[in-house]
Length: 464
Image 1 (cartoon, rainbow, N blue to C red):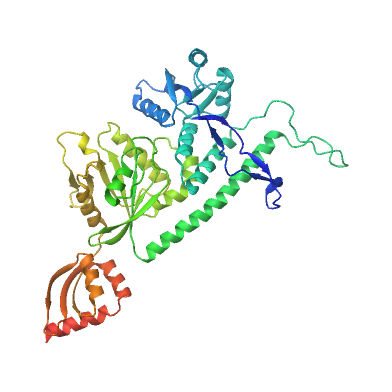
Image 2: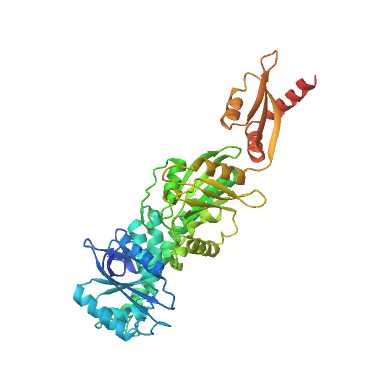
């Protein structure tokens, strides 16, 4: 958890390109973390007679993922949020008493609070108050490992913080000086903070634009080479990284916790009748995912937007799987990826009795879902088969006469497992029959122009 929210640390700089003669410290986060474990009071409101206890259970898991100790959970029911405290006056007093009695260091609220509601609760309870968005941002800050991930998290933190700045106690206005024309009140500390945050946000956006440009260049290279991309998406903790490791043996960090993976990972894999394919592991989604995070992680989510096929990973043992599917589809719709072809991958079938891995098809025989267990490896071959069916294009059947000097081409055919019956003629030439994906075949024609002659030789020989 966080111990305080502050403006990024400023240090003097002689670089004229830096605004105001200051530079933001690169080794400081917007939100500083404590070495001591935070002690938290959880607060949740039910807005209907039907109590969404699953949402509360998920919030507890979020708090545990942030590394806090949960002291108590307070709930209440209201028809609408209170304008001052979000909760009612009586419940706010109860939260204050719980903080004092249990010596809590933070109050976590499972809703999005307005800046004024946050300040009012903090003033009443005399401790930090963090809403759902702030908690998720804190978890992302802990999980970010790559340079790009840290930039994206800091950008989301600053956007969230920019609406929550308050005037500091005391007279901290900047006086302009006593020269003629410069007398009078100067810039307030609040205005300075806002300006510095605005400058830093612009710096981060410029850096992320460069990263996005590099990723876009890589995607264009893959598209030019007709290399399809398969992207893993799904609710957080559905087993995406475990499935990614089971397919690619990449050794990506996977754990039974929310948002274990933030940074995207790409690996090559070979699919029969398709050829080289890129598999992408991306950040998991969650209900009420903060819009600032979606915006900040746009470059990362671009791998999903540009994918040829989505594998929507679902924890089949989760009672809330239908709600999770809806939450993921909402985020996909928000980023413009809802219309991309997808396969539902129901993971963790090993946790259920009487369900063996299988492929589910629609009335037309198209693959719609695969049931498997990434943990045990059961059903992985079925997933390969499903990907192959959804990605492969029109098949080309050709007969090629390969001279002894064309060993490299024959090896290529064999690696792609596209060889049919073959024979030798009296001159030692190899006559092979192949069946291969149309896109892959056109790639080979570009790579080996002599294939056109070899096809003509085979046709001439067989007709002779």
